[in-house]
Length: 429
Ligand SMILES: Cc1cc2nc3c(=O)[nH]c(=O)nc-3n(C[C@H](O)[C@H](O)[C@H](O)COP(=O)(O)O)c2cc1C
Ligand code: SF4
Image 1 (cartoon, rainbow, N blue to C red):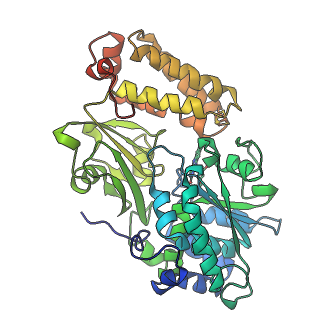
Image 2: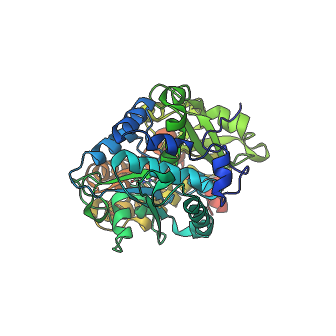
């Protein structure tokens, strides 16, 4: 099974700091084309392409463009969400560090589409080491006249600024990210109003994930029709998948949407390490569903994964082998969420801790069968009443793992022997 490189085509082939090399490999052609189009024409092309956000929710990108372009306030912003706080996820890092000009070009195209002249890149705190590479690339592109003031002699200015996070997972949530850029404590805002109308500094803002923005130049350059030859009807294009955990070959891979999960694990990543057996897979990051080994013959696109009760999310695939205990892994997930809860709303602040307590009781052999019902009730309350996606999805791994690994929970409740917990193993610790 071969990868299809649309977004990764320059990885390792050009000097990421050198905007001229980027241009010589077809870079900035899309921006040149976009400069000859109206904003409405750019949005129409993105609409026809069917591009959906790669940051987690799969929201149609053209709709964000339409909302922002249609806002009354003439001062608008483009924000690139490069927070990539999802544990085990590296796909944006690869794009940021190997092909930054592709992201700048996408941001400038988005700016033209919605009438914005300033874009911010919000860089994950742990990625500040990439900043010098990105800054050098930006300065080079500006010195060559591709970006910045009067882009390519068009009379259109588009300035890109960098801001760094401080290590909070919640700051990847778009409104918390705005607060953070504004110098405030990173907490999600109440909605409405939506960010397209009242976003950064209270202005209409189009915020997208790094990978989403990197798709804009190929779409404008090659056209929506070409883009739709890749992927599926509902999720066109390619997707970056970060595969981590117990496979032989881990890394970031690019495939058309609709690729099969089992093929990724066994054909691309060489199967399970050291002859061990597959236990399960968590798709979509720490807040994703945990499925068992019998369920991995699954199509990976936004709608198929949602239909099966999970979410494609940012495309992270955590492969778990039989050296691990699912209850222990879920406990670890919950430990992460209770620590990252910003505390603004009660369902998440208190609920996350209570979920942890319940699963911890089970994991340590002190649980009761009624705890499984309590977990379900609490999870539903959090899903319905928490303020942001962190609280909504904290319980997804617990709930799905209880469905798909009920036997493991019952064993812990019955205090049957669990070789992993007894040995204190697990892939996280
Ligand atoms: C707790 C939390 C953390 C998030 N972290 C990220 C992140 O690191 N990167 C990202 O692109 N989106 C993240 N998101 C999703 C963003 O809020 C937003 O939906 C996304 O960046 C939109 O971009 P897209 O339309 O291109 O997918 C996070 C959401 C939540 C609730
Ligand atoms: S759901 Fe959690 S992270 Fe989100 S606002 Fe509420 S307390 Fe903060």
